[in-house]
Amino acid sequence: MTDMDAFIDRLNPDMCVVTAAADGERAGCLVGFASQCSMRPVRFAVWLSKVNRTYQVARSAEFLAVHLLTPEQFALAALFGGETGDRVDKFARTRWTEGCEGAVVLQDADAWFVGRIDQRMDAGDHVGFVLEPLRSGARGGAGERGGDQGRDGAGGRPLLRLADSLAIEPGHPVD
Image (cartoon, rainbow, N blue to C red; front, top):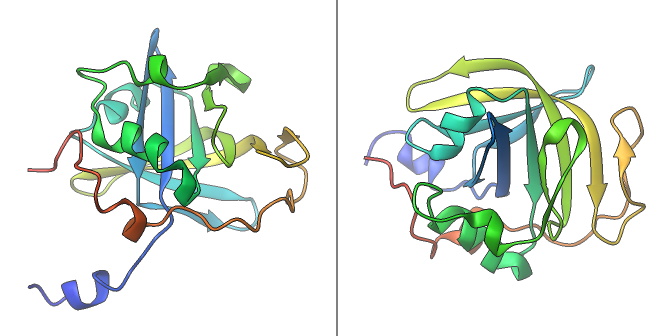
């Protein structure tokens, strides 16, 4: 156990699915490293593993879509976290649509947003993608919103968290 394990082992972050589309390819993965990183202007950062196919597609993408799931959507999380796009077409197994700017939006996600990639930051085995939100939507909410509008207010359902997803064997395990 390293000195940081006592700290990191106590964390239970929200999990999300990040999708990317570029050069005729689509990819998506389950992500546990993601957070709002600025209030004005609003920015959100997602961190993708360099061994992940989604990272390979995201390197050429201009936009990413970030999707929040609930614990009831475990099967969707398992698809994007437990399968690799190197072997499986994940998008053939779920409902999706082309969102703004050609981003891939999962129709069954509890909430989502599409963001323009503002910055990329190499931080070791993961690369951070800082996103400028452009459009968002929520299941059972007010529908799609522009990036300049306020919060949806449709939330309230608990989100899928790391502890909920520990049973998923990574499709691309980190060495």
